[in-house]
Length: 308
Image (cartoon, rainbow, N blue to C red; front, top):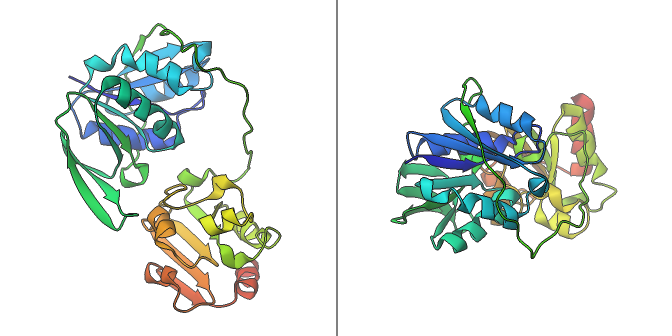
């Protein structure tokens, strides 16, 4: 039986985490299908059809899926779930919202945030804020997995999958979409950025956080923040990197005024190169940093920005 990937997209194109999720799926079984559910989402469908290693695209286009309400998407997935040994989704807000509901209705155990596939029944996932890796084996007939995208390479776009249309399933009478407020930014998306500049409590204020943003803009990086900075009101919630925020693994991660609590390290320690600027030479962030500068960030950051 094949494996199903539930694609995360914006109707026009796939989110990068979906391509990582497909790579994980190819390690679970020989035949992989991708579900594209949305409204006027032919762009995402056509992009998905090009993914290397995909056998089939299941395409459900209906106004009910415009806002990806988990209750409505779950009803659709339930109509086809029995055809698959594994159902995977990215370990993003999208996947974390959808799969627990599907897990309950299928009465199977969800395995969250997998970081590797050992075999079709066995997976690894981080526990204790990433300080240990658990190996989990499942005997469920249908295995539900959310995938930590930073641990899997992105699938290439050089395939040609067939497309099968799906009829919309029954809608939940208990939910309706009321509205949303989306943050718009010219900067790269945090979870997909190749470079990230993050600020912590040491930045001191929301006004001073402009130092972080100016450096990020200078090198074309995304902006991140520690939970301490977010809780202090220096940066919005969607900037948060860490165990309770977003997990990232860019080529370059610059941590400024971040002490390096284990919850933050859990979200960025897989970055290829880590640069830390902190006036405390004993800060835990220096234990994972490739390059560390013990200095006052209010002097070092503007100087670094100027020299770049």
